[in-house]
Image (cartoon, rainbow, N blue to C red; front, side, top):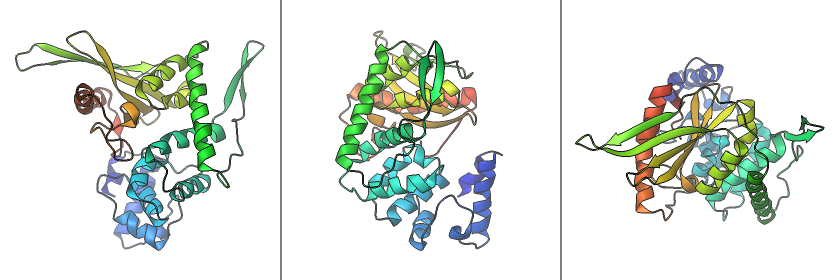
Length: 314
């Protein structure tokens, strides 16, 4: 829980510091003003979380394991927005329980499912009527997980992804830059010779998000509305080799208000070590694995340049 003292001075940070003081003075975490209901078992598992978990991620771990889930599901859920937020927890608790009750679900499917549900239940739609953009309610504001079939839900998620891909053929929706600067860095060898040029650039349209999602095999297209409202910004990390070949390496999500990196994922949502949320390794090429390992340093350079923070779970 020491991480609470490195989160700045925002209300969220002060709340977590209060939890630290509560536990540090002998209080039970269940009796603190935490954003979820913890059983005794969940509270015990929360305190046993790995040292590099954030407090929110540790809460999710205690919740999932306490409900009967397993560590791969913990990692998968913490790789989604649920690992850094407890908004609408009464609803999302039911979704987490739904995951636990479907133990044969591939953990790699958890991220797309969470993005789909969030989009359907909470993200307003936009339509152009008479030349003006009109904001409409979310597609399914009354979405409920009760009685859902996992097979049918996965089919709906797949159809939604296809719809996001089709948006690439529609007129481009664009938004203003976030105000953060891009990165342009060239790596050199021990003799000072230039080797690879690394860039981190902002994606500023639905088309760019859709293309990034297709090339990287994840659902970054679901961030379009948050980008348009300025809450989030999405960035693509790419490398150009000495042979003048350019490759996408990582997609980065930034919460603009707090200047914090909330996601940094490679192809198929892989982390820099090559593992996906389920802990499995994908059959990436050796060249891509090397670039993915290098991405951690490049991301560090950009963080230092822009003064960005990053969750320990990213």
